[in-house]
Length: 148
Image (cartoon, rainbow, N blue to C red; front, side, top):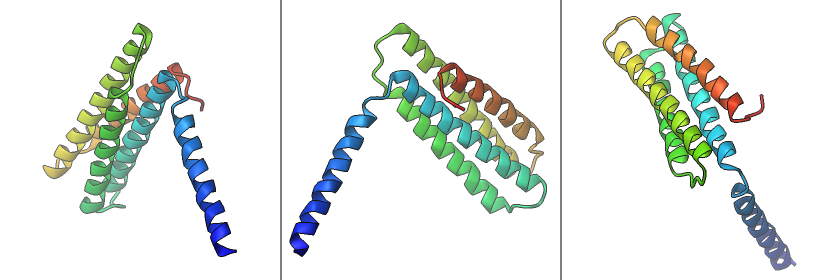
């Protein structure tokens, strides 16, 4: 009896993996770019929050540094996903170029924040720039049709 349940569980798990694989291939290039933009928004907002908490003494240097490193990892993943998309049309290619440009700007802003923090300079400029980028990325997400 136990072997039958295990077989059914294994079959169900295999079916779930197969369906997930099939469904993940159903997203349009614009939806996939939208996912990269959404991931970038999250990274930028995380970095901005970490800086804000640090400025108010509610976070340590180590925690803020880790948050900024994590944000950079998210941005790297978002850029990688956008770069690997197989695009067929010029419109999608232009959208990818715009997305990658925003991700690069975001990466530069997070790196600038890390440098300022490491050099014990004010983080005001970095926080402001990250806020601007969050707004720009949100507008790009809307343009790509990302709900919310």
